[in-house]
Structures are given as structure tokens and as C-alpha cells.
Length: 333
Image 1 (tube, rainbow, N blue to C red):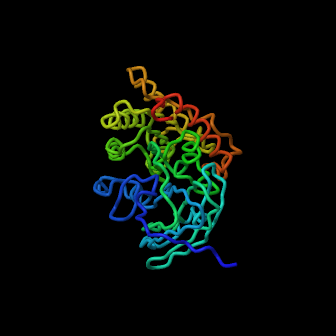
Image 2 (cartoon, rainbow, N blue to C red):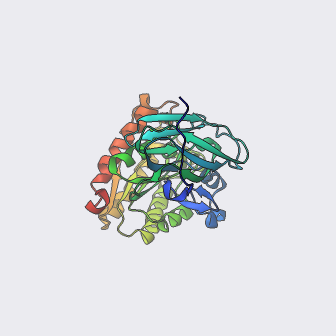
Image 3 (spheres, rainbow, N blue to C red):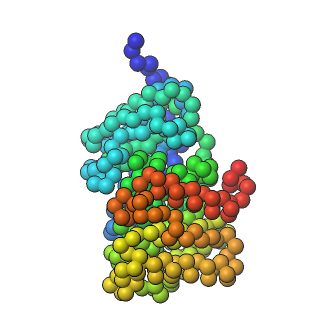
């Protein structure tokens, strides 16, 4: 018996797409392209990779997605596992995995779907641009959750795009996570804070500070002021939006080792937490702090820095539990 044919009209991909921050033409990007010149080059390089962008749908059988291969072209060296279209049920169970390769021009991928609602992650390593969908309906939109952070937020070392902590916590909370994790960057750059301020969202999480130990070294006093300024700018656009700050997760080699300015990661974590607590004490009642030091153990880190699947699951659980206490009923449903 041959494969069941996919019938019906092509529909634009836009209504299916989730996790979208900004558009750069027909591409989904993770920073404002009109403000790109104010961002560090490493931040914009990561923002061009559409991490977390996905299609949410309901279908009664197989469906197709028409897409264009990206001009970015090369596989991201640390995201080699994301070279396939991965279709999952709402609970995260994988149903289909369709390998892909970076080829020029428009192409069509077929997903043999058994029926019901689901999520389709494109192969982010190749940055394809979804153009149309046939044989499926868009899923209802969920409240957007803006998640700013570094490589751990971006999902490095997770076993798949649905297994990093933002999508795990997003499923638990019933939110649409917009992944603004920038590997090697996310040092609290103030243009990023202003971009967050202008981006609609029902909840926000900030998880930065690890890359302030090396890369661009910070002192505790500098990171304290950066954190205060970042929060102040985000609040210009989101004065009452639930906002959770996760202080730096553990990194054993950095906890007691001084950087070029004499600061250990423990010192920097304390500075982030002090800045958040000071703002809470000053009356920001929609702000919460989740201390990162105790969330993971050494055994959860696959390379001494990034957590594996078990570690991402622990972070997701802690974030979901803490953020749920801030969310109003109209957001949680």
C-alpha cells in the first residue's frame, strides 16, 4: 500500500510558527534586525540562528511543509543533533524524525503524523525558512514567554530542541517560550534590555552572568550595576510583567577562580542576586529571584559547563515552579 497523499491548499507558515521574536524579511531572528548595529557581533551571530522557533499544529494524518534552505548554510558545530525535522506530541514524545541536508532552493518535507496536536521543530543547524503548510491546521496561540540568557538557555548539550529547559518549562506552564539565549554572549548588554522592553510578552525570565566571568570579564560592582540597569530598562516596556531572574548556574572551574578583574563566579552570582533583591525591596512586586548555585551538581554538567538532559530538566522544574507563583490566572488559564 502506498503512502497516503497529502491534499488541500498550501497555507502561509506564519500562523503555525511559535517562539518568534522578530522578523528579518521572511526569516525569524532572535534580536531586532533594525537595532543590530548596537549589539555585539557575537550576539547578532547567535540571533541569526532560529533556536526555539517551531511549528505548532493539529493534523489528522500526514502533512507537508514547504521551506527554503537558508543562505547561512553551515552546520552549527555544537548543534549537530539538530539536522532533522523533529515532530513531537504536546507532551514531548517524539513521533517522527525526518533527516535533512542543506541544499539550495525550495523544498518540501513530509511528516507522517498519526493524528492530533503536535509540535514540529525544523533542523535549526541549517536555519531553514518555513514558507507554507498543507494538511494541518495551526494550533491555538499561547501567551508568550521571553527567555533571555546564554548558551545554557539556548539549549546547548540538550539531547534535542524540545529537551532544553525553556521548552520543558514552557510546556509545564502553558507558555510559548521565545528563546533569546545567545551562546558565548548574553552579558547583560543594554541594547538587549531595550529590545526586550519593546517585545510583547506575558512573562520574562533573565538568566545571564556566566559569560561575565570570562569573555568580557566583569567585577562584582560592575555586574551589580549592569543587572540593575538591565532590569530598569526592561521595566520601561514591561512595568508589571512577571519577571524571574535566574542567577548563574554552577560552573565548578569558575566558582573560586578569579577572572582578569579578580572576581570569581561565586562573587558575580552574589552581585546579580544582590541587585535583584535590592529592586524587590524597593517595591517591584512582580519580580522574583531563583538562585542558580544549588540547581545542579557537577554530575549534571556534560562538559563542566553545560547540563545534559537531566540537568536541563532540573532547571526547567525549578523555573516552572518559581515562575508559576508570579503568573496571574489569565496567563496560566
